[in-house]
Image: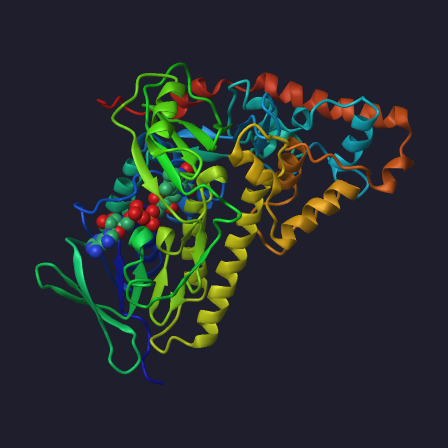
Amino acid sequence: MVEKSIKYIVIVGGGTAGWMAAAAMAKVFGRAVSIRLVESEEIGTVGVGEATVPALGHFNRMLEINEAEFMRQVQGTFKLGIEFVDWGRIGDRYMHGFGTTIGADFGGQPFHQYWIKARQAGRAKDIGAYTLHTMAGPLGKFMTSASDVPASSPLADIAYAYHFDAGLYARYLRRYAENLGVRRTEGKVKQVIQRPDDGFIDAVVMENGEKISGDLFIDCSGFRGLLIEQTLKAGYEDWSHWLPCNSAVAAPCENVGPPTPFVRCTAREAGWTWRIPLQHRTGNGYVYSNKYISDDEAANNLLGWLDGRALGNPRVLRFTPGRRNKVWDKNVVAIGLASGFLEPLESTSIYLIQSAINRLLSLFPDREFDQSTIDRYNAQAAFEIERIRDFIILHFCATERSDTPFWDYCRTMSLPEPLANTIRLFRDTGRYYRNADELFGQLSWVQVMVGQRIVPRKYHPIVDRMSDQDLYEFVGKVEQVIRSCVDVMPSHQAFIDKWCKAPPIAM
Ligand SMILES: Cc1cc2nc3c(=O)[nH]c(=O)nc-3n(C[C@H](O)[C@H](O)[C@H](O)COP(=O)(O)OP(=O)(O)OC[C@H]3O[C@@H](n4cnc5c(N)ncnc54)[C@H](O)[C@@H]3O)c2cc1C
């Protein structure tokens, strides 16, 4: 057999996507493959992206990263979920907490089916009272899983994610990847050379004339998509009609009080704001549609909402929600912002980077680049981002707000059919079914649908097999177990101080 394995990988871009890809490839292939990464300090990175989902823990474990050391290096804090404020109606507040189940399933039915009946009878609290994360978060409590409790205890398996400084994260991964032999080249790519016969990328040429050739090119060049779009013209599917926000302004501020173990996303007149607590500062941003509010007004409003003194001037970013028609074409795989963009309402972009890396490793090609492999990769990537897209749209469309033209638009827009179906089924029957291995499952969809005031009319008939008295006792017992677990949890600040307190940074 002729030797066809990939020997040279070139990564264009050194933001979160570029360095995550470099770190993972170096860890998996060692020095058997040459990995080069080019990036331009002058162009810089997008520099935001500070909240994650629990899956990142798997990535860190794959890299064999020590978690406490990692958290110190990136000024990290812990995340139990996201608090949504003013989404269904002004004055509403609910948590989308991580984990696997709400309450405790019984008789083959998820807990929320019992909750619906008890709630209809006025005998159950808000659904957040029945999950550890959604109770502990607002009380500022956090701990990792306990090993000295029964396996059935909610404390035995606590899912969590991280908040971190995006700049420090990229630096951390760069050190990691360079230690494993990744070669970094500073400078701008000024030309891309394609093979004349099949259009595959042969090399990128730097401004100083250096030519960097490769077998496989990973395009992590950000929104511009230097290889996938500017060179290969993959095309872009625009989702602005479902996700009207196209801009963001970011402005970190000084911390006021201990860090919350959750992100807060507050619905605003023309979009929403994020608040992400780190050890050394708080990240803030306003994601909005510039059709409904100007950049200046959005920036001024954001500054007015900050908890503490602003650190630096607000920075405006523009984007188009959507995905590349093909994220893998010929010998180019686009990862990160080069592959598509969804606003960070559910902190999913870094997850999509991680997932793309895993997919690429699983479908890793040889120099023949079989089309069947490429097609499978593209189909999986499209499925994954479209399911997340629908989950994000849910937050906008399931609203009763009519106080601004932005919310009028969101409330009345037409929906992707799979999402419309999911909402219909839940509203009619309280049922939800996960599609294949989409990222967000029943726990997430139910919490958000209920939080957004989608009230199921009915519950599963099997629930009626339990007497009303037993039902109320069951629901009450679950609440009491959660409450007693939360009581013994330390504060988030105390946990950080003990386990991963970062050195102070001059701001
Ligand atoms: C407002 C906002 C908030 C976000 N918040 C979150 C969040 O909370 N959670 C989350 O998961 N994600 C979030 N994201 C997404 C997250 O920031 C990105 O997914 C992540 O930073 C990856 O970016 P990237 O590496 O693809 O691109 P970039 O950071 O833009 O990096 C591009 C790289 O390409 C290089 N480059 C480009 N052109 C050239 C050239 N010609 N020559 C050489 N080098 C070149 C640049 O120098 C840079 O190194 C957010 C995004 C935005 C816009």
